[in-house]
Amino acid sequence: GIQVEQSPPDLILQEGANSTLRCNFSDSVNNLQWFHQNPWGQLINLFYIPSGTKQNGRLSATTVATERYSLLYISSSQTTDSGVYFCAVGIDKLIFGTGTRLQVFP
Amino acid sequence: NAGVMQNPRHLVRRRGQEARLRCSPMKGHSHVYWYRQLPEEGLKFMVYLQKENIIDESGMPKERFSAEFPKEGPSILRIQQVVRGDSAAYFCASTLVTTEQFFGPGTRLTVL
Image (cartoon, rainbow over all chains, first blue to last red; front, side, top):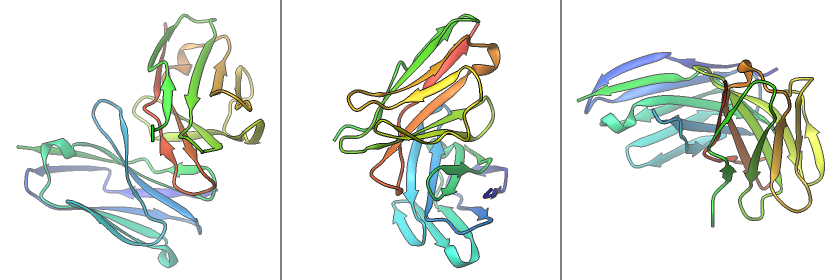
């Protein structure tokens, strides 16, 4: 089956810092999504990005499908960005990575 | 347009009882997926359904778990004779076809 690897597993930042999260996957897919799971467990859709680049405020994402990776950029991080960021890929069902746990301190 | 709805949001059951989790997809969506998140883990696929059909149940435990998506009404994930290891967050997602999946808020099941 498809393998999904995320890095780094943990990230600690001070408010205002920028960060890049990476997602590598092992096979061709037609769906790639980034999610933020906040400390209360809510799963928030960030991007649907099987290829190309998208931006939404301080967040942007790029997927290079031919090289099987995606990057999530967080700029000027805020404490509310804390939580776990998941990448998920697939054809029908989504296969989730193990996540990057982000902690942002004031 | 209302999002994906799940109820109940929290469910407490004693060992041996049944748990029924409901998922109402977004309006117009006819594809539903169920995922389970064990404590401190990522989400794992359980089952993929279309109206009145199970398309892929490769992630479902072989016993005690079943799912349906009837022609009318919500999708139901049913767990019979729950055990402590069933304690988890159960998320459902809906989609038009095999594109972006929209997730509900989840049902957190606690088995005492």
